[in-house]
Amino acid sequence: MLRTVPTDLFLGGDWAAAENGATFPVHDPATGKVLTEVADASPADAARALDAAVAAGPEWAATAPRERGELLRAAFEAVTARAEEFTLLMSLEMGKALPESRAEARYGAEFLRWFSEEAVRIAGRYTHSPAGTGRILVTKQPVGPCLAITPWNFPLAMGTRKIAPALAAGCTMLVKPASATPLTMLLLARVFEEVGLPTGVLSVLPTSHAGAVTGPLLDDPRLRKLTFTGSTSVGRALAEKAGHAMLRTSMELGGNAPFLVFDDADLDAAVDGALAAKLRNGGEACTAANRIHVANSVREEFVAKLTEKMAAYRLGPGTDPDTTLGPLIDADQKDTVTTLVDDAVANGARVRLGGKVPDGPGWFYPATVLDDVPTSARILREEVFGPVAAVAGFDTEDEAIAAANATEYGLAAYMYTRSLDRALRVSEAIESGMVGVNRGVISDVAAPFGGVKASGIGREGGHEGIEEYLETKYIAFE
Ligand code: NAP
Image 1: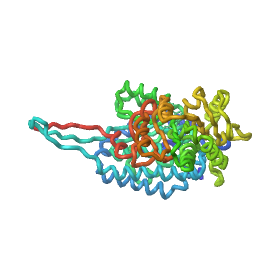
Image 2: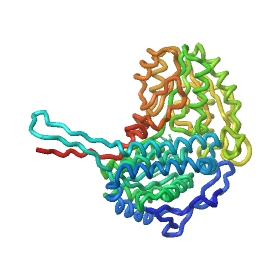
Image 3: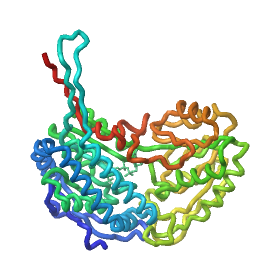
C-alpha cells in the first residue's frame, strides 16, 4: 500500500522534494525496519511554505464560510471513503492495532465534519454602550497563518483537530507532523489536494530537524499562531519562544490521568472503563489512565478482574488482524516504560501481570498490572505512555481527591461511583480540564478537549475549538 502514499513535502499545494534533496526514514515499530524514506524539510522549505500561506491568506479569509465548510465536508467524505487506507497506514507507521486505527480514522474524520458545520456559525454581537452614547460591534476575524506541530500517537486526529478549525475560521496552516509518523498527514494532504483546497492554504512539512525548521517560523512576524500537541517539556520551550513573538498559542500537552474507583461503584463497569482508559491506543494516549486509585475495600476484587481482562490482550504487529495490543512507538519509549515499571517494583509494587519485555524484534511491551504501587514510585508522577496499569489504594474520599491532584498535570480524570452527589463533588474538586464519570473514554469532537496546569492552554473540538483560530475585533460606532 505504501506505493500510493506521498513521500514528498506538500508545499503550499505542490508536491516537492526537499530543496537540498534530503530524506529521512520512517520505521515499522513492529520490526524496527525502515518502511520508506520521506522528504526532509529544511528551513528554506518552511520559509517557502510560509510565503505561500501568507500569499493565500487574504483570499482564503474572504472565501464564503459555506464554501470553506463544504471543502471540509468533502475532505470528511474522502477520508471516510478511504478509512481502510488510513487505518492500515496508521497501524504500519505508528504500530497500533487495527481496531484502534479504525477508531482513529473515524474520530479524525469527525473533526472535518464538525468544523465544516462550525464554519458557518462564527458569530459576533451588536450592542449599545451603557451610557447610550455609542454602538458596539464585535466581530471575529481569522487569526492568520498558523503553525501546527503534532505528535505521533494519533497521526490523523491530532492533525484534523487543528487543521479543520483553522481552515473553517479562514486561517492558512503549516503542519509539522511527528517524524515517526509523517505518512498519515501526507495522505491527508493528498485528500485536501483532491477535494480542491486552494493553493497555499495548507502545507505539510515532515522534517527530522524539528527545532531548526520551526524556530525561524516562530521568529517570523508573519506567523500569527502556534498550535502544539506533544510533551510538556517541548511545549514549555515552544511556549517561551512563542511568548517572545507574542503569538497566539494553543498547547495540548502531557497528562497523568487519575482513575478513581469508589467503594459504591459498579465494579464490572469500572473494570471495563479502566481497560478502555488504560489500553486505548495501547496506553499511548495523553488521556490514558496513568494511575488507578481504588477504594481498599474493593481493591482486590477490582485488581483480580482487571488482571484477568488485561491478560486476554494479544500482543503483536498492529497490522495483524488478531492483534489487540501493538508495539510501542520506538526503542526509547520501550526503555521509558521498562524503567518506570522496574522503579515501581524496586519501591515495593507487586507485579500481577506482565512486566517483562518479550524476546524478538520490534518495540513490544506486554499488558502489565502493578498493585500496591507506593507514592514513592515514579510511575505515579510521570506519564508512562504504555500498557501498564498502576494500582494504589485509598480509604477516604478526601484521600482519593488529594491523590488525584498530586500531580503537575491536569488533562483528564476518571471516576466510578453510583453516587450523584459524590460524582459532582469530586468532579468539582479535581484539577483537570476533563472528567469522565462512569466512562473510560471521554474524547468527543463536540466537547472542548484540553487541560489545566502543566497539561496546557486552550481547547480543541466543541464550539470552543474554532475560537482558538479567531481574533475578536471591536468596532465603535457613533
Ligand atoms: P514530543 O516529543 O513533544 O513531540 C511532539 C511534536 O513536537 C513532534 O512533531 C516533534 O517532532 C516536535 N518537536 C520536538 N522537539 C521540538 C522542538 N525543539 N521544536 C519544535 N518541535 C519539536 O511529543 P511526542 O512524544 O510526539 O508525543 C507524546 C506526548 O504528547 C505525550 O506527552 C502526550 O501526553 C502528548 N499528547 C498530548 C495530547 C493532548 O491533547 N493534550 C494529545 C496527544 C499527545 P519530532 O517528531 O521530530 O520529534
